[in-house]
Image 1 (cartoon, rainbow, N blue to C red):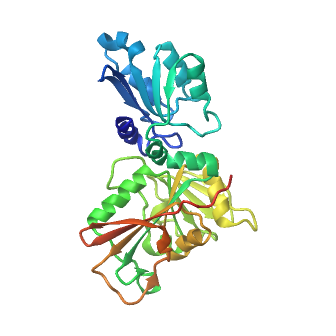
Image 2 (cartoon, rainbow, N blue to C red):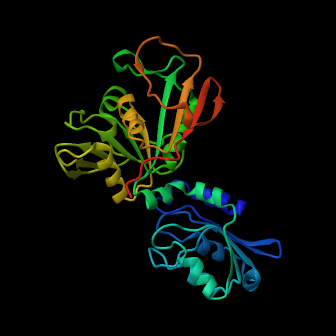
Length: 345
């Protein structure tokens, strides 16, 4: 099962809003086939696993054990149900990491296999299997994307200089980690002031992978058209109070009068099937998510050698949520996790 989880992670960033899944066929302690879900809309892990069995090993499939990190599906979507393929291949034993809690599956795959006489063993490494697909489960159960908060601060707690002057706070290694994070998540958000002052691109330029949906809050549509967020290369959702339209790579999303901004945005992302969101700033935007309890994890990067004495203070987050730290040269990475985040289910 550890190997299945390892395989599943290879699909990170490419299968949203589907879960990451890995599968492996083992015959007499020998791996005869393995695969993972590599691309949204493409073959599932089980299909790729069976397809990767060598011709001379195919006769071993009925007496092999199929290991899969998530319960096989039993419905037609973009691909046929994996349970039908498992039964067609006459596999007699299936070991499953955890149950798929989505409405379309939620035990139906296990029931079908057991009804056909297949020995099903589950759960195995359940916590790790669920952690791997926390984004997928959040979208299914809480009706919103899994929310990551991320910011960088000086050693004395400032996120920007006076009047919002941009600062080069994090080092090259931290920047690369941030770009990896962008390539693996579905969407990324900044507020109006950050977009205006920093003029960020919000693209994953230093890591191979798909570009996230860029989101900017611009209620009065005051950002200049030359802003990097409006340039081609990645789609951009402009959250505003003035118009609804699609113009090239720009989607102007008008919130209803009196609607609360964060719930309106998260509902729209749920409808679009975006299973994860990075909130990168600035302080006002980040603090709104913190105060509403609308966040699941946070990464705070602190440059331990930089002090500026005055400027825009970083958001505040309770130390009760802190789960760990790591140091990358002069940058300290602090990790937080919120197990009781808000739900819109």
